[in-house]
Length: 86
Image (cartoon, rainbow, N blue to C red; front, side, top):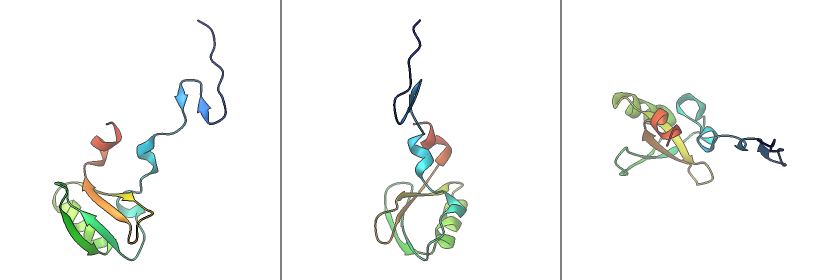
């Protein structure tokens, strides 16, 4: 089998990085306020990351920043382990 050479921005076996690795999760979210989306897609409102983490912990899930460019940034309550492998 011939060897495949990496081009700029790629590794021999495909693109670099995992798209899910770009998301900040739980304690990595350090901003004053966030918009929180629940696990079913319902908007829970604007709150502090601590309040969002508390809600996620109560459900046994993670708080994941999904839209960091938005103002305020959008975070979703989800199972991050499951999301990473989808």
